[in-house]
Image (cartoon, rainbow, N blue to C red; front, side, top):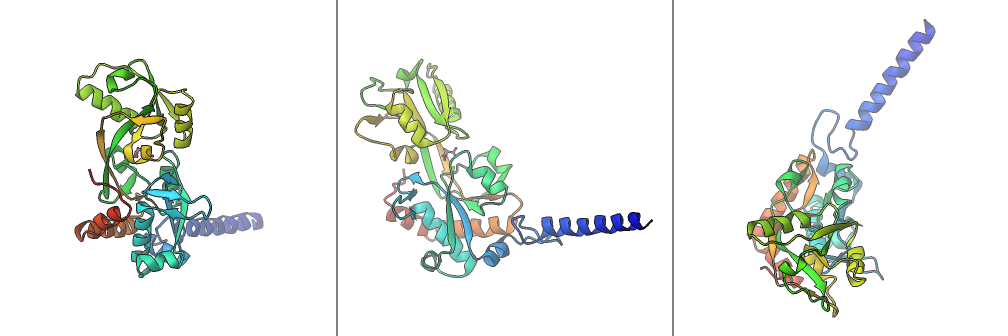
Length: 281
Ligand code: GLU
């Protein structure tokens, strides 16, 4: 009897513990009573955790000497943090209210889903499929997919890619957009695709001629342009970038969306794009 009562007590204790663990003010973004705490969680923590790219010039580049992230998307992070903490974007930067973490196309989604990051501002294309899993802000930039080839490859057009290998990043939209483009335009080419985890690996594979072409968004490809490679004169798969946050963190998603929409309406997005010398095509 005693043992039974003891185990009932232990069980009850465990239930209380696990309820508070899942419903507390941790990364779940919801309180025990079901209230959305996603913004307050960040305020209480004192820092907003943001996933950004480390290798996309003008958008988000990490200075290897200082570790600092610089670019349009990093500035957007300071703007959103300013909104959350009730300070200006400059103050958010000065006070270290944003903690950046480098992400790539494969890691960014899971890091938002598991609560390690509050949001991701990392050339993340808004798609209908992704919207089923994540929240996205209104689009802050539209980019097109491009193709980079070795300058001495003799490849000059999309038709020349027949039978060639195109390198793409895992979990990116690049292969799908290529196939859509050739189908819609009746272009008869049949390349094969090879997936890589990161862009530096793709650039290296192109330089080593293990692949014939490297395809992704033009903004990303810009970071890997050099004297021995060149862009094919083609732009397709226009896609919108949005700030991504977890599906259940509705308070945070609303704050981010309102901030981005306000910045679109009052010209601040355009001013930030100009500051970073990003052309709007
Ligand atoms: N923007 C594209 C995507 O979201 C390319 C991948 C990337 O952003 O790294 O799939």
